Each structure stands twice: as structure tokens, then as C-alpha cells.
Image 1 (tube, rainbow, N blue to C red):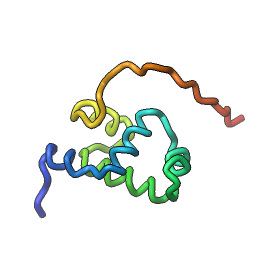
Image 2: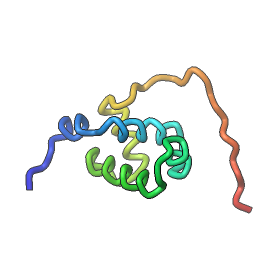
Image 3: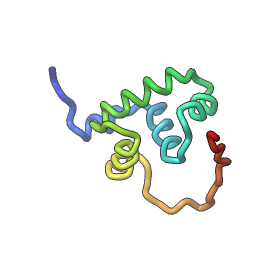
Length: 90
């Protein structure tokens, strides 16, 4: 089986996968991503799995790291901080 180089893997991220990476970086949960993009929860999970394979990482932290290292998203200070409500599980 032929493996893709990192550059080819990066270039092979679909527009939807890049959109999901950006939402991950903005700290959206899988459910929030699904709701925002109007797609199924399981579809988001599938996209995340493919993104991890293409970026050769094993975690969400790896996705974020590689997104910045590979230039998928620019590393810049956000212009506005948006605080999300945190719902304590207790």
C-alpha cells in the first residue's frame, strides 16, 4: 500500500475537513460541530478519524498542533475572545 507524504496528506484535506479543523481549534465539541454544520454526529466523528489519519496524529491535540505546523490555519491572536458557557456536570 502506498503512503502519502505529509504534504500530499495536507493537500488532500477536503474543504469540509478543513472547516472541521477550524471548528476544533475554536473548541467546538463534536455535537456543536454537527449542529453548526447541520450534519450528523457520526459524520463528524468520521471526518475527525480521516483528519487524524491524513495528519498522522492520534488525538485532537495532534490535529491542532499539525494544523498550525502545516499551515492549515494561520497562527494568529484572535481578535475577539468568545466565552462559551461551561456546564458543570454536577
